[in-house]
Length: 111
Ligand code: SF4
Image 1 (tube, rainbow, N blue to C red):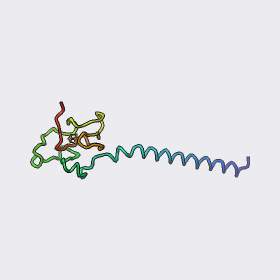
Image 2: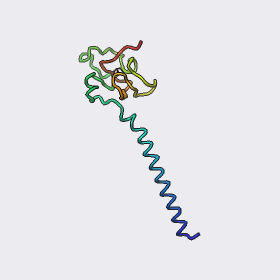
Image 3: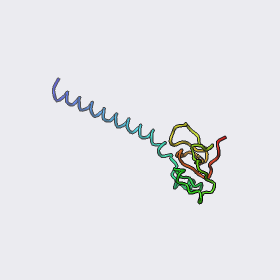
Image 4: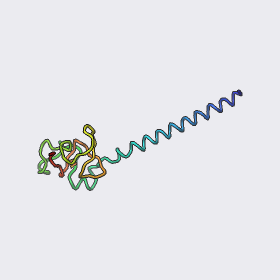
């Protein structure tokens, strides 16, 4: 085989492999992005309306009289999804994931 021809074949193979890698990386990013994008932002108007915070320990009981020590998303009936996940769906914020260490005024005791 002509050396320049084999070099051309090698370069085509490298370009094709790099393209496949880029596509695979893009697919992984698109698949991973929805979960990351779905986390509830405490500045979201719906979150602000219910006083959502990502860390229940930061709640000031004087400003939030319905908050009691020990309450958090982790022990709220509204929390859904898989135990052990740090961010999970919540019945009060459809389509969003809340931090299990968080809290809001819609906290409901587990049955
Ligand atoms: S309703 Fe419950 S699980 Fe949802 S954000 Fe409020 S405290 Fe957390």
